[in-house]
Amino acid sequence: MKKKHQGLWSLLFLGPHMILFILFFLIPAVFGIYIAFTDWDLFGTPQWVGFNNFKEILFDSKSIYHTQFMNGTRNTILFVIFTVPLCVIVPLVIATMIQAKPKLYKLFQSLFYLPTLFAVSAVMLVWSFLLSLSYGPLPKWFGLKINITSTQPWAWVALVLITVWWCVGQNLIIYVAALNGVPVEQVEAARIDGAGNFTIFMKILMPNIRFPLFFTLVTTTIAQFNVYGQPLMLTNGGPNNSTRVLMMDIQNNAFGAGIPTAGMASAMAVLLGLLIMLVSVVQFVVMRRQD
Amino acid sequence: MQYSKATKIIFFTILAILGVLWMFPIVWAIFTSFKSNDEIISSDFQLLPQHWTLDNYKELTASNEQTPVFKWFLNSLIISSCQTLLVLVVVSLAAYGYTRLQFKGRDALFNFLLATMMFPGVLNLIPNYKIIDTLGWTNTFLAVIVPGAAGVYNIFLVRQFVVGIPHELDEAAIVDGANEWQIFRHVILPLIRPALTVVALFTFTGAWNDFLWPSVVMTDVDTMPITPGLQLLQGQYLTFPGVVTAGSLLALIPMLLLYVFAQKYFMQAMALNSGIK
Image (cartoon, rainbow over all chains, first blue to last red; front, top):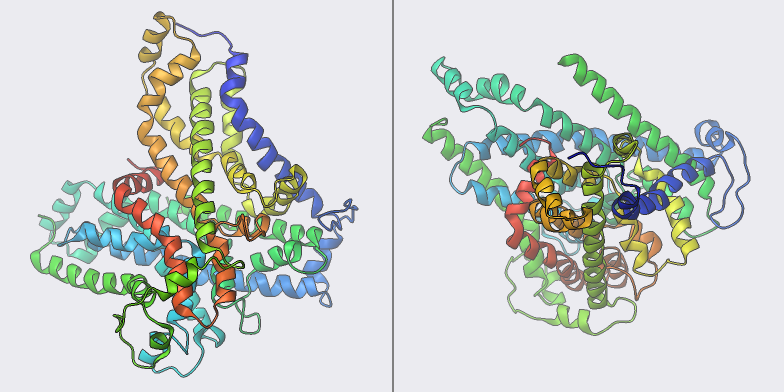
């Protein structure tokens, strides 16, 4: 029974989402790119300034926005480089052990997943007290007489390790599910051929879960490029702006104290967006080539 | 039997050590929230409180005008529940529409929606603020409830489920004289409940944990949700770790409860998300 065209029903079923999508995605997406080419202050009428914002951000070494952007981008990229490999490898290793089904493996899986569900602000507050020189047990145990969150390289170490602690769960569940899907016969055949655990991991498990691995690599990278809450709550970008990430500057230029420079902030957002897309495309191409 | 007993014991030991490390911050926070301030500051570390006290929680309830934590908690509850409800309605309708309704350009439209998921979300932050401001929604719950329902991913997820439902079921209903709404309501909706559970869980946790967006559009202390609110609590009680820890735990409790009761669905959902079955 072939149905006829159903204009009215389509409106009823697709209309609600379409309205929201246009209002809160499509219009903002177009408008966001447009205002990057203006001197908009968030409230007045935007004036077209062409590529001036981008020129200033990228090349004008006397401009505060140039300094912000260079520092913020550098720290954001550093954050991605430090956290992404750990956020893939650590859960992969844990998943491999869980997949062997030792005692209590289900409990372990739940434990490692738990932090993922917690709000960034709550997590960072608890950690900042754990690390605090005056109140926290950690500096005492490690015999550190310094304030971890305001001394490098400790601030970076803390930021990265806490992020790994926080985000391992998501990828872990994906890897466990993927590893459970690997055909048992392949593993058993390899065992008969005398393969050890490590060989099995590299030669059989890894190739079998290559799609989820790639999927998580891309999603993790995108997520970490958008880092904002952790450095804001833990180090407030310090010491000396050495952990200040680009999202903090974008937020602050648009919504912080002082006159909003939303045009400039949007231009930074466009550049960050381009960077994220570029990295995703490169990852995609590299993965394709290896296949 | 894929792994030897010795291997399993080694794995168990490593996992147990890691597990203790993983849980330590949470356990520490729970006990710390029941300690007095003097005890927290005192130099020798003890996990358990020597004198259990509810002072920190009392301080939170003492309806402080700058940091009404329990009000934030309630706000978050309302916001997350409403967004979940809205998303469920919008997503299930759209998922039905993009699979069962016939109109010109349907699949092209859906593919376009999918393609927009590649667009970096960071760009929408500032314009969305302007739209909320223009609608007069700043500092109202609408500002944090409604935009979250514009996403495409959930539709994609639920649509996959609807695609898997055989058309014979629809046709039987059509023979009985059902219209599109009745097919949706009585045939499709009951069958996509597992997918909708997953969507509901992730929408609720996502809304509860959202930080950047509410901190931009919800600056009023009375309507603020708890996740950005904690930032104010930190500023207010900088030298009272017990109070801040108690407040943070309050923000974690709903997620903990949800996880305990819906763990199965979280695990299914994550596996579903990775695109493998």
